[in-house]
Image (cartoon, rainbow, N blue to C red; front, top):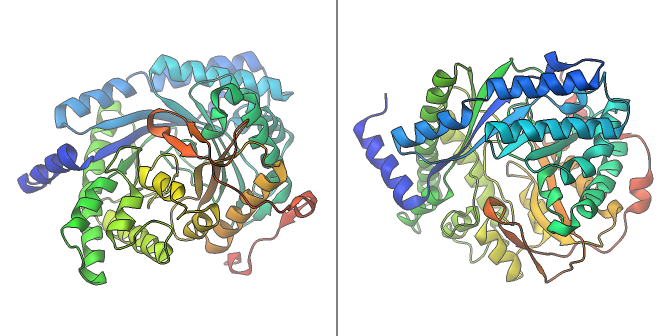
Length: 454
C-alpha cells in the first residue's frame, strides 16, 4: 500500500522536481502476422496494432488526470520487423511498405513513437535481415513515428563485424536521406549490443520473441528528484550519498509501479517491467549531468566523472529493485548529449569529449546517445565507433548502444536543433585517424572467454 506520506512526497516531486513517468509502452507480438503475401502482412499488422492499442493513449491520459502523475509519452513496441516480413519481403522496398504501415498504425492510435523496425543479427544475417537493414534509410525518411534498431553483438555470440560495417553505411545513408531535417532520421536509429527484449524507451524498443502476445512496460524518470535530494546532503560521506540516491530511486520507482499496475488493469494487458532509467530532458533541472556535478564535480567530464556515474547507476538499481518485483529494460542513468542541458553545457565548455563519453558508457546503462558529429564523418569511422561500443557491452556483459547523428552539411562548432525531448546539440569532433582497413575485414569477433557458462 502507498501511504499518505508517500503521496505528499510524490506531489512535491511532481510539482517542484520534474518527476514524471517518461513512457507507457505497449509491447505487441506480430508473429501471428507473418504471411507469404505482403498485402496480407500489412493488413494484419495494422489491424492488430490498432485493435490492441486503441485505448492506450486514452488510458494514459485518464491515469494522469486521476493521479496527477505526468505521463509524458505513450508508445508501442512490436516484434522485430525483419521477422514479421521474412516470408513476404523480396527486396528492401517491400520492407519500406511495412514501415509505412507501422507509421499509419502509430498515427491512428495517437502514440508518439513506435519501435521495432528492427533486426537481430549478433551472429549472422538472413536475407530478410539484410533487406530490412538496407531499407532503414528510406523507411525512416518516409515515416514520422517509426523507430529502428539493430542488434549487432552479444556476450554470448560475439560481434558480427559484417553487420557493424553495414550499419556504419546505413547511419550515413540515413543522414543523407533526411538531410533536409538536419539528418533527424539518425535520431530514430540505434545500434545495440546485448539489446534487451523489454526496453520501453525509444528509439531502441522492440517486443522480444520470448514475450507474450502483449505486455505493458513502463519507464520512469527523475533526475531532478535525485539532484534535489543530493542538495540536502551537500558534502556528506559516500555512505550517506549512496543511501540518499538509493532511497530516492525507491520512491521514484514506486510511482512507476503504480502507473504500470493501473495501466495493466485498465487495458487488460499483463504488466511486464519497470525500467528504472534516469532519463533527462533539455529542461533546466532535469539533468543527469546536474546530479554528477552536485556530487562534487566542477563539470561533467572532469576526473572522477566515471566513478560518480558508476555510483549513481548502481544505487539507482539497488533502490529500484526494492520497489518493484519486475525490473528490466535498461535501468540506470542515460547520458544523451542533446537531451541533457548539463551534458550540452559540458561539451560547449570543452569538458566533455566523445572519448570521455565512451569511458562513461562502461558503467552506465546505455552508450553513446544522441551525439551530433560532423556530416563528413566517413562511414568506416561510424562503424568503428559502433564496434568500440559493442566491444564494451560484449566484454562487460551489459547493454551498450550507439545513436550518433552525422549532420550533413555541418561541422564542429555548429549546433543542430532537433526540437522537443530530442533537444539540441553542439557538433563535436571525432578522431580523424582512419579505421577503414580494420572495418573492411569480414566475419565476427568471437565471444569473450567468460561467455562460456554451460
